[in-house]
Length: 123
Image (cartoon, rainbow, N blue to C red):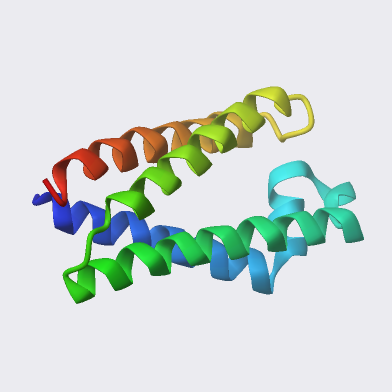
């Protein structure tokens, strides 16, 4: 698979997560933290994170579509995912036991892949 194809897939996943977090933050909160996670503060936080992911994903896709430089978008994605991995580790006791490995693993993989892609594209 080509680096560009990986970047498109990664950005598409980020857009999907962003849309779901924006439109159904209560569902995302309950899935990650249980039934008590449907508070206004949790919904707000998940919408903010969803907006960030949607923006980063659209930025990558738009840059690729226009033939513009994409490494900045990918580096920002790597930083966001790295911070999400660290946040997952710090909040592991508040996450459902089955969610923590998936959340931390996906964020770590996203950070590593975004960082690698930033070096592959625009080179």
